[in-house]
Image 1 (spheres, rainbow, N blue to C red):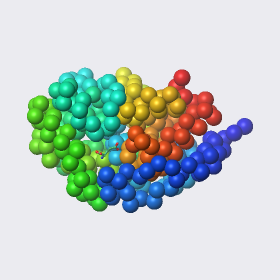
Image 2 (image 1 turned 180 degrees about the horizontal axis):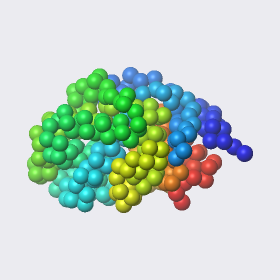
Image 3 (image 1 turned 30 degrees about the vertical axis):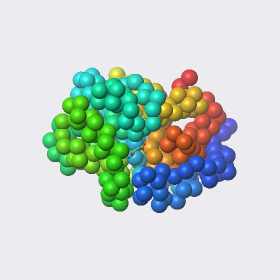
Image 4 (image 1 turned 45 degrees about the vertical axis):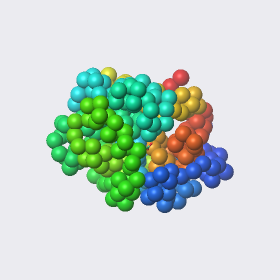
Length: 308
Ligand code: GLU
């Protein structure tokens, strides 16, 4: 019988020939400095056992994966009131698109596109009062769910994002003009960038996502972070919106709730079974890890562990 380790080893073998395909995100210059042909995949099970292949200890920029954590925090604070400020429908548009935001009066389609995560950050600043407290609460939450105090952000990536963040600033300004941003535009966007520039390895990310596979409670420590109903919502939004305008494609090929980031990471959840993280920096044309998406597709095909 094949073990999970056999499956991961086999995936790595199948993925190796395509590690040179796709393009590293270079609109954030600091991200373009990573070694592009890295690959890692980790899974964590409810009994605490975990399996890894590739550079699973290598920390990388989690980028939009942070949107799962900020959305979780905001949903647990504001519950359904959050949806007065941000929707929960797929956007069918690129992650940083301005067009839809204009004709939908500054209400972003969902918390996983940039505009949505910027609004979510604004609601967190309202709740925690200061920028430092907002960052600390988000990073403390990540430390708690990953049961690991060793989580930080990358100053270099953060300042590179700030220097080249024209489009995110445009999104934030547009929302401000529609009265959908309470705090100072620069402050909100900088805090959003700080969340995006948090670094974690696949080992850490797969551990961090486990509560979302178990109705909001960490099956290892038994700590309850959110309700079962909130967990259902977050996983649903990951399934329908977690990969921007390729969310349908990801659901079709992988069949799991997941969230990608332009740093090359993807997290995914197999409800009641495990959580998964993959990393490979070269992206497909939608901005999702090319090899990472393929690895997840092979994983669910081989193990039959898709939700469908
Ligand atoms: N920090 C990135 C940006 O705002 C996040 C995008 C992503 O990971 O998809 O452009």
